[in-house]
Amino acid sequence: MTTATAPMHRSLLASVEERFLVPAYASPRSEAWIATHDVLALPFQLRGAARRAVVETTEGVVRVLEIGRGKQSGAFCSQLLGTCADREGEGMLTLCNPAELERLESDLVLAEIHRWMAPRFRRAGWIIIPSDVRWRGKLSHLPPPHATTSLKSDLAKVRRFGYTIEHASNPEDWDRFYETMVLPQARARFGEDAWIPSERLRRELSRRGELHFIRRDGARVAGICTVCTGHAVWLPIMGMCQGDPGLLREGVYSAVFSLVFEWARGEGYTHVDAGRTSSFTSDGVQHFKRKWGLEPVADPLTHLIAARVGPGARAAFVREPVLIETEHGIETYPEAM
Image (cartoon, rainbow, N blue to C red; front, top):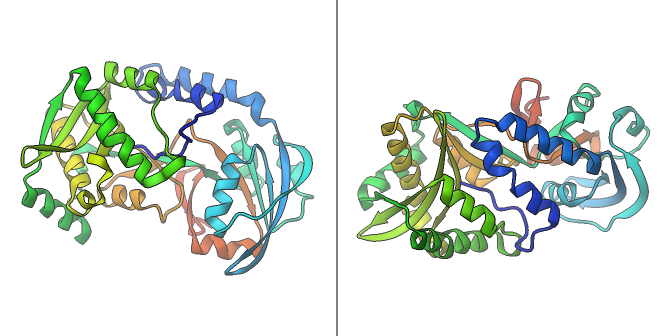
């Protein structure tokens, strides 16, 4: 399941980054692809424009300083603080040495940094917030043996509605999958901010992946693409018929997971990568993946924000906790304090 976060009219940077998705997540040489991605990104993340804002929140006034392109930090700040205030430019700053940013007084400093700079910012006391996290798990443990009440209810719906799985492969099926499931769902959920796979990525997924439809009463109600490498299955894209929210209430996503996981186990795969969610713990898709027993891991391609959180901004994080990257893996902030 892919979190749709990029605009329909993608930038050149987004188009380049999209080319790394399949080789970085489903290739025997993934480490080389990830390293190449990091090298190419480095020149664009050594310096950034600084912008100040004063934001009125339910907890009080928060003085914010953003450093970088602003696309990631701006979206993060809007969700964290509940609003997007006008920003005043303060010139360019380097994003290599956190000591050079210590003099900047603010309740919250958000710096869009390169991944290679994360350890030094972390050692200086900053928290490292990824734009996205990935969700993985062992197929033998999915669903978990001690399911939540919510998951038990979802699994009961899967049995009640009699969902079944169908494997498809012809080009017309792939076109129908995108046009009637992936695109309508992305637009229904994210509007103009929806991420729409490019034609190039669609061709690559159809060449490398397998397409599965979920059927009910003879009709295709959902679909998912799987890409397999080694002993793992990656779920890059899924969708439901016309983005119909009623299907969610009838357990269609649980049917997708249940039937695809069963298929993958039968094929001998041992692990699953169920795609991304945002770092905010309030993310509904994140809740869904957690109850299935999936666990968050760092995404090597995601953008990072280094945050220095002062007393005036801590209440906002208590209200909107986030997943952060630590030396020991993914943890929750502020619980990770």
